Length: 184
Image 1: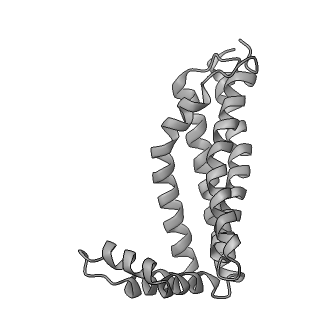
Image 2: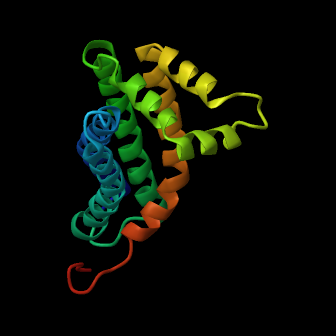
């Protein structure tokens, strides 16, 4: 298959898969933001977040082995994973903005306030911020004072940065041939 066809397939697959991963990340964020109401939501949010990484590997694996029959160059596989993360990050940032602007009702701030009530968490946060002169109360005040657009942009920036770091191992894992499920 010509490289041009791979390019078009990568763009199409990354857009669709990025939307799925973005929905998973947004669901994870909403669960974590509402963990005050139920501690199980925190675990569910964490599970969805970790599961999304495995979903990216599976999506890239299927694209590499089933769509491209193992003929896709590594840089193209890496580019696919990067685009999935980019589209998911944009979708999540948009969803976080809408959620925080219209639906949060203070749950996000209450989550951090509840974390400070736990002595172990407060001690850990104070130890982390000891060198900077910032207290855990100051940190929570700064987080909760962020406007919805600023919070969404901060999440977008951190997701893209962390996504760039993790995309290489995810792309490598997606190229591992498993049993008879991959055909060449």
